Image 1 (tube, rainbow, N blue to C red):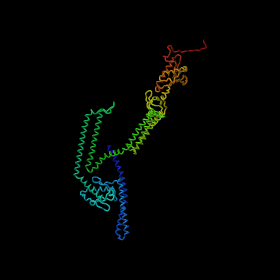
Image 2: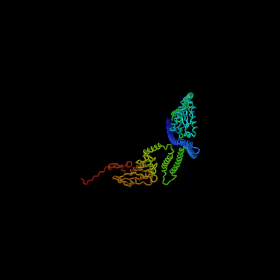
Image 3: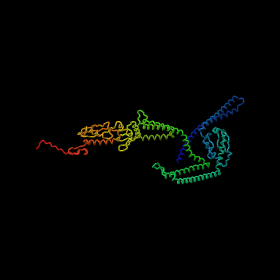
Image 4: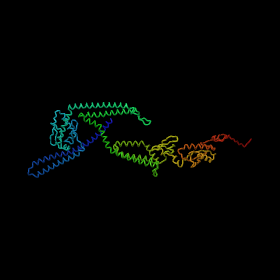
Amino acid sequence: MFLLLFSITSRAQTDSLILKNDSINRVALENYNLKLKEVESQIIADSIKKAELEAQLLKLKTTDNLQKEDLLRQLKTIEESDKNRIANKKSQIDSLRQTAKGYPVKGVLEDTLFLIYSKIGASTPSERAINISRKIRKLYEDDFLNADSLLVMRSENTFDLVYKDMIIMSVSENDAIWYGKSIAELAGEFNETVKNSIVKAKNENSWLKLSIRIGLVLVVIIIAWFIIWLVGKVFLRFLRFIDAKKDKWVKDLSYKDYTFLTAEQEMQVILFLVKIFRWLVYVILLYISIPIIFSIFPFSRNWADALINLIWSPFKIVLFAIWDYLPNLFSILVIYFVMKYFIRFVRYIFHEIEAEKLKISGFHSDWAIPTYSIVKFLLYAFMFVLIFPHLPGSDSNIFKGVSVFIGILFSLGSSSAIANMVAGLVITYMRPFKIGDRINISNVTGDVIEKTLLVTRIRTIKNEVVTIPNASVLNGNTVNYSVEAKEKGLIIYTTVTIGYDVPWKNVHQVLIDAAHRTAMINKEPKPFVLQTSLEDFYVSYQINAYTNEASKQALIYSNLHQNIQDLCNERGIEILSPHYRAARDGNMTTIPADYLPEDYKMPGFNVIIENDKIP
């Protein structure tokens, strides 16, 4: 069905081309015939004038020499005009030979006998060809036809092919010029062609010939049936042979732990392909046999040609199209390979920049790969622009319409994606962070594990991978904990509130000692304490310490808080954060029992009564 549809499409295109050529041919011939009509009017006028001059010349006496010379001069002028007319007509016909096509005169067997190019009188070339073909068939249908009675007779301006009282056709001067022969010679050739065509048709359609052709058809059918039977037997034996060898030949098709096809599935595929191939052989055999049968009978020979062309024409069109497309294909290959190796050269340059072997002032090494990706995309886009005109059908309206439609869909459906891509480019060259940095974006804190044109991925301390669109990253604030941690150190800080009854110097020392006791906190620069506020019930102390391990803040904070608790307890300092309200008399201290003296006793209630008057 696919081949049939493809052939019908190609046939429709061919028919449209033929119709177009026929229209051009028709216009050319009509223009020529229009000019020919004017020339023929002039020929008639010249012939009348010539006859009048010749009659006047005969009436002149021998003594009228001056008048005689004038008449002879006029006759010579007419003859020269006639020669020029014939030469002009030949040149016009020669110019039409390359483009104009004649109308075929068909024989009884539907074979083309000759072509008609010019008109006679009111009859157009196509009408002449149809009338001649109809008269030839009428002669063939005459059971008492004597082919030798088909004669050529001369009339006033033409030579006629005549059988008894029927004029088959007339051969004019224009016909002779088209064929480059004299009128008499061309008429004789046409007469022999028509005569031989009719005799051949009668011989081809005789009962003896018909019987022989029927016998040949039966022979072709028997041979085709025998070949089909033989092919079936061969394929049956082949299937048995495969079945016998399947355990040895057919194995599971697998890679590592994944099996693509089991042996049974492979066997089913092989059997399916064998059946397809067998039916393909049947179709090819049938396709060959039918044209052979059609070619046996004269009336169906055109069917055979049409059936062969039904398949061959599309293949021929495809082959010629491929051949014509080879220069464009070569251009595409040249553009592709030149751009491919140029991109490799660009990649080498950017890799050298990334490895800091090649340094460019103002261009950071971590820009190399993103910039290379942008340059590569632009180079591939430029390559596509160069290749696009060489693609088949690139200049067709359908191709252009589909391209515009895809572009509109892409622009409408990818606005957010493009916004993220632009944000990704901006972020790349802003350099707010890099892979492995500990950052905080939109209240999400973690290490950067992936940075693409569209999104940024962060792994939190709880092993949660958070994906953040680059547009959100660009629109929000980004805190980078790692950018200064290695060289200058990151300051970690926490706040503790202590009551006013504890000297601030003691609190400072406790917090600094707790920082020194904490692992991964730097000794230099030294930790320091800030008193951030004086509240109603307590003082806020903020301990600040330097660390180079930005990605381990959670562990550092936890250890720091533990050490602050331990040292405060060891040195008898109560941490009043959050708010703690206590009555000292009759209440246990908030310091854990492990840090209290062994003889510590909970204080009792103190009651002081003041009375100036004693009874």
